[in-house]
Image (tube, rainbow over all chains, first blue to last red; front, side, top):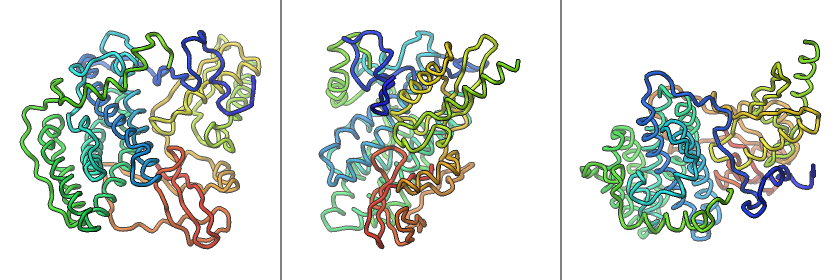
Amino acid sequence: MSDDHVYAALAEGHEDDTRWAYGTGFEDPLHGVDTAVPAGVDGAELAALCLELGDDALVSAQRLAEWTTRAPELEEEVALANIGLDLLGQARLLYARAGQVDGTGRGEDAYAYFRDAGDFRNVTLAELPNGDFAFSTARLLVLSSWRLAHLQALTASPDPVLRAVAAKGVKELTYHRQYAAEWVVRLGDGTEESHRRMRAGLRQVGAYLGELFEAHDAREEVLAVLGQVADTAGLPVPEAVPGDGGAGRLGRHTEHLAPLLEELQSVARAHPGATW
Amino acid sequence: MVTVLGDARRARHVAEQVPDPELPMLTLADLGVLRAVEVGADGTVVASLTPTYSGCPAMAEMRAQVAARLKEAGFGRVEVRTVLDPPWTTDWITPEGRRKLAEHGIAPPGPAPRHTSGPVPLTLTPTRRLVPCPRCGSADTEETSRFGATSCKALWRCLACREPFEYVKEI
C-alpha cells in the first residue's frame, strides 16, 4: 500500500475504473450499524420522517454550497460550506436509514439523485433562491432554530439510529444557529442599508413560519430565539403567517426546486451506475 | 484462547496507530474515534469507528485505512463498523492527542458543552473563551472565524505574536 498521501487507501479496492472518480469512495454511511426496526415502530412512518428531515437537509446544503465564491468574505464562504457539509452528512445518514426501514432497500443515491421535485418533502423555505446575504442569513437562523428544536425532540425517538443522528445533529445545529444569529445582529445593528436589508430578509422568512410550524410545531422555541435575536439587533420580530397545510411536506413546491434538483442530479443522471 | 487474546491486542494496536486523514499528527486512538477492536471466534477482526461530524468526509478513508492496515498485518478477515451512539465529542480526544495538537500549532479544545434537556440556549453576549496561542502561549488571542478548513476547526489569531492558528472547537 502506498503512503504517498493520506487518502491513498481510497484509491484502492474499487472494482470498475470507468465508473469511479477519485475521492468519491462513499459507501453506506450506516455500514455496520444495527439496522433492525425496534418493536412498536412503524417502518413506513419512520422512513417518511427520515425523508422529510433528509430532504430539508439536502436542499439546504445545496443552497448553502451556492454561496461558494459569492459570499461577502472568504470566511463566510468557508462557514456556509461547512454548515452545508454538516447538513449533507445528516441527509446521507437519514436517507440511508429511510432505505433500511421503508422496505425498498434503496441506498442514499436513489433518494438524492433519482427522485423528481414532486417526490421531495422538504419545506419550501429551504428551496427558495439565496437572495441577498441578509435573506440567506434570516433563513439560516429560522431553519437552524427549527431543525435544532425538532432534532432535540428526536433525541428521545424510539428508533436508536434516528436518535443517534439527532443527537449529533443537535451539536452541529447549535453552531449553525449561533453563526446566523450573530450575523443577524451585526447586520441589524450595522449601517442603515444593512438594517434595511436584514429587516426585509426577516420579513420574507416570516411568511414561511406557518408552514414550518405545521410540519413540526416548534413555535415556542423558534419564536423565543427570533425574539431574542431581533431584540438585540434592533429589528422587529417577524410575524408567523398561518400556513396552508405544509405545502412542501405534501410535495407541493415552488418553481425553484426543480432547477435546483436538475443541477444537483445532472451528473448522476448523465452517468447511470457511476460510483460516488 | 491465548492466541485470540493476543490477536485482539495486536489488532487493536494496529488500528490505533492509523493516522487521522485530516489531522495526521493524531492517530485514530488519539482522536477518540476508535470505539472497539474485537476478534471473533472465526478470526474476523471487527473494528468500530464513530464519525466526528455527520458530514465528515474523512470517514470513508478512515474505514479504508483501518481495513488496509489490518490486512497488511496479516488479518485476513476484517470488518469496519460504524457506531453512532454515544455521539463523539471533543472530550474523546485523549491527553496525548491534545499534546500533539498543541505541538503542531493547533490549539486543543476546552471541555465540550454539556446540555441535557430543554431548549438549547443561545448566547448573544460576547463569550470570553481563553484559547492560549499554541506558538507563544499568549492569552491575548481572538477568533477570526468559527469555521475553518475542516469541520472540526475554527480560525484564530494571536495578537501578541501576530500568528494565525487553528483551534479544534468544542463540540
